[in-house]
Length: 327
Ligand code: GDP
Ligand code: MG
Image (cartoon, rainbow, N blue to C red; front, side, top):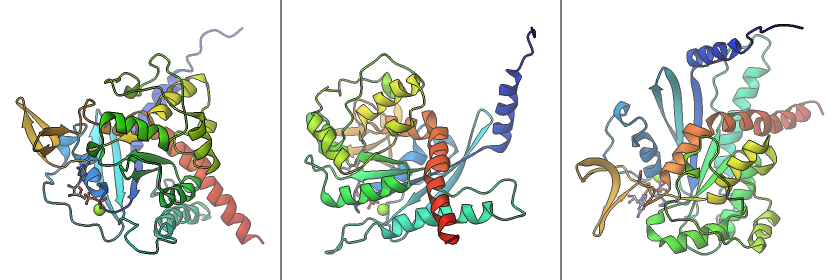
């Protein structure tokens, strides 16, 4: 019988390699105009995780007229992350919103195509630059009612192409009860309330915001539309994934508030929205769930989002394109 070989040393090698290579991660924000997408891009870049490395923004957000990407390289404890956020013009302003998803889906597929063209070269780059969208954050208007048919149509198409995390936009306009009721109407997965597992900090933060009502009829309602947002149940690999992801599914869509201005609250500098009644702090879980969104994207599920993009969404595209070119 073999004695101890020490194969776990491979873990150190993987870590060193990953630190040398760094990570590329691409997010896209999508939704009707005026829901706070551009503000959220700034919120993500200004939030406390890497605030000190970001240049001051502070200028009012102009209306987004075309797709535009902002990239920042963030370095923390020797790990480099090249984070790109693609902002998109709002849709839904036209009388006829038919095909308003075309430019967005077109962009996502174009990135798959770039990657495919590089990958099929005989002499190819050792590292193919990755511009594929790893996660699309979809802004749902805070109507407090059901999802609108336009959002359902959009989401249905989007979920087939890319990982989608829906959020309730401008959540400060809803009461806590309205947020909860809306969330449960919007989403289907009842999930299970088990003890805290994994690194997703949302498991720890109850903040008095939860309720457990979720009608199976709603579950059926969205299922019939074939909308499966991230983290998709069918990709849970083991029981730990299942437990952790169920907790996330239970809380999605996160009710978020965006802000790009800093204020002093009790001697602390916070990112928030100043209103007549006080400051809504974006980092404060008692005020909104922006921290859950940021943690999911950048902290706990970054690699999983990349893996699903590569192994599922890009793979579907690749199979489709290669079949197409061989007929
Ligand atoms: P976009 O069209 O989706 O990119 O929306 P913008 O980011 O340009 O924001 C439109 C307006 O909504 C601006 O006046 C923002 O200051 C405001 N806004 C953005 N996020 C929020 C939010 O979470 N709550 C509230 N009340 N207003 C917001
Ligand atoms: Mg905008």
